[in-house]
Amino acid sequence: MITGASSGLGEQVAYAAAEQGATLVLLARRIQRLQQIKIDCEELSGEPVFIYHLDIGSGEQIATILPQICQEVGNIDILVNSAGFGLFREALDIPMELTKDMFKVNVLGLIEITKIVAKRMKNQRGGQIINIASQASKMATSKSSVYAATKFAVRGYSNALRLELHPFGINVLTVNTGPMRTDFSLVADETGEYLNSLGRWVLEPKQVAKRVVRYMLTTKREINLPIMMEVGARLYDLFPTVGDYLARTKFARK
Image 1: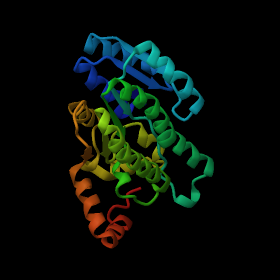
Image 2: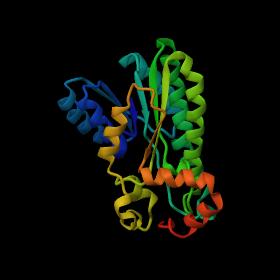
Image 3: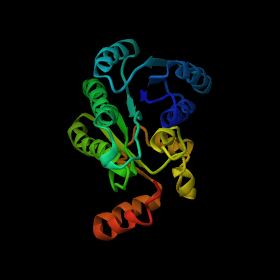
Image 4: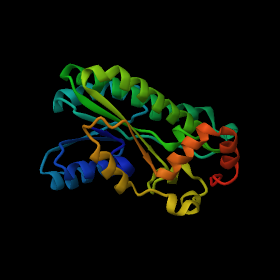
C-alpha cells in the first residue's frame, strides 16, 4: 500500500515494486492519474493493482476508506507513507491554516493510516511500515520551519513505533532524503530556482525508489540520501554552532 502514489517518489516506488511482482494498493487524490499508473504497474508485475481516491489530510476519509480497503484487498504486508507537501517560506510568513494543513497531511494523516494498518499487521504477526521523512528531519534550514517540524515529528513517531512493533515482527523503516526532482518542489519552491541552485545534490526519484524497494521486508532502520547530507547532519549534531553558521550561509539556497 502506497500513499501519495500519483506522482513523485510514491509513483516511482510503485513502478519499482511492480517490477518485483508486487500486488499494489495505490492511494492518492488524483484518481485519473492513478488509473494510468495502475495500467503501467499491471503490465510490469502481471499482478492486480487496486486504486483508491484518498485525501490524506481528511481524517473522515481515512476512517471510511481504510477499513474498506482492508476488507476488499486483505492483508497489507508493506505500508509506504509517501504522501506529503511543503512550502519554503519564512516562519513568520506562513499562514496558520497552511501550517495546520501541512501537519494534517504530513503527520496526522500518516499516523492515522499507520494505526489502522499496523493493527492488522499486529494480528497477522508481521509486516513493514516505511515512512518517507526527509533530511530536514535531522537538520532544519531557513524557510523550512514548518515542513521540518512535520518531518521531525515523522521521524520521532517512527523511532518510537519501531520499538513498540518489534515484538510482533513488524519493522519500521524511515527514508530521509534530500531534495528530489519531483513535483514537490513545484509547490514548495515559489521562486522556481531551488533545485537549479543545488546541481549535483538533487536526487532522482527513480533511483531512490529502487533503494526503498531493495530494503522492503528487511530489518533496515533508515535510508539516508544523499550521503554527504547525512554526514552534514551528523556533524551538525556534534558541532551545532558551526552547523547553524553553515545553514545560514553555505546551505542557504531557498
